[in-house]
Length: 417
Image (cartoon, rainbow, N blue to C red; front, side, top):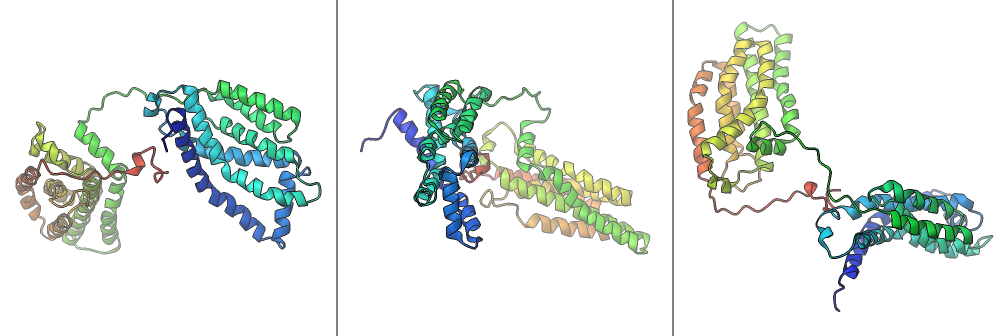
């Protein structure tokens, strides 16, 4: 079979999209009425009564408005999913704006299939009820779904096409010959006024950021963790402050408790941020081919990881300034070791090596007992810097790292919604 071309291929694509949306909407749309009928004393009588009300002459405008409301809800739910991405590369197709719009409207109409199928299944039951079946309601159903699609179309400007479509829905609530003809004219008018999708998202011109690009990339990868993780780092400091407040401790023991709380808070914060950075922004071996040295890349990561540590350090200084000074002396080594732990040789995207939090927590515990070890930790910072830079240089430039695609950033991904 020869594949369709031009408008046929575009319409077929959109109809497939609408069919998928219809299948997604069918389950809840069918499940809610079934549950409502099952709780009745006589479910079969309730179904017959619903059929007579929706499709019989006794329903009146209320039944028509209910059908129109469901159709409009389905179309409004489907519209952003059908039009996602249509304002981008599909505009290069050799078809007009009206063709694009009508193909997408076909998808919105197809998405309302569960409502049409439900009413067609209820029609035989309505025939047997008193008053019979009002055939004009079934005949008006195609116009109802088209009016709901036009009323949900997100083209610009929407205020021109939506009022005629909504007025057509109101006229179809109590279908008749005159109302049907008027609704048909209104729908043709609404289709004529319906505008195209916005060609691009309007963005405001932003001033250039004073931060270098590597910092901006890392900050975006860290996301909310860069702001929320310092609060987690305050838990060890808070625990040690409660220990000092509720116990009569010797000055040396109280100072050690403050150093322990501050050191563990820094370790927890660095572990959280470095682990998220290793997962969401893994080290790119190809970056070694750029005119930027390994030492600079390590220093940038270490500075970014060390900056939020000011929060637990300030909290520790409120307990004991000298304890905060001892923890601050360990911070350069901790940050450089965390930057080196990101540059592990294992599979990228698997997180942070477990060695760093273990050795950092052990050093923080020893500094709490022997504060002079903070000077040794500060003296070891150049060695940690050299080791991290060497690990960065050992990254193989030609190594192939599989792209871990995130559906959240893909507007055409079904799983991201």
